[in-house]
Image (tube, rainbow, N blue to C red):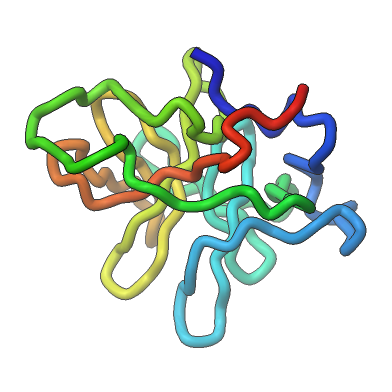
Length: 166
C-alpha cells in the first residue's frame, strides 16, 4: 500500500526547516488552536510528528514530551491535505486496530511508519503520531499521552490527491 510521504513529494513542498521556510513554500498545515491566541501547526523533530506552537515543536517519545527550537514544518502549496477519521466509514469498536486510510500522511519513522494524527487534550488541540494497533500518541505538559484506537477520538492527516506525484 502506498501512503502519502511528504519527504518524496515533487510538486509540493512537504517538510522544510522552520527557519528556512518562506511564503513561497506554501502554507503551514493547520491543526487547530492551542488557546485563544496560539495556532497549532504540524511539525516534525527527530523524525517524529508533533505540534508547532509559539515557535516550538513538541513531539512525544518514550513517555515524555520533548520541545525543540530546531525543527521542520509541513508545508503545502496545493492545499490538498485534510483531517479525516482513521478509517473509511463508521467506526466499529474493536475492528481493524492496525488499519489506516490508504491516503494517510506519513509523519515519520520509529523503525516503522508513523502517521500524523490530532486530537484534543482538554481545550487544546494536540498533534502527534499514529502507531498502528495503539492510537495517537502526543505530548502535553512534559508527558506523553495516548488517544486509544478503541476510543476512536482522533483524526489522521490525509492527502486528497491520494498520492502526491513522486
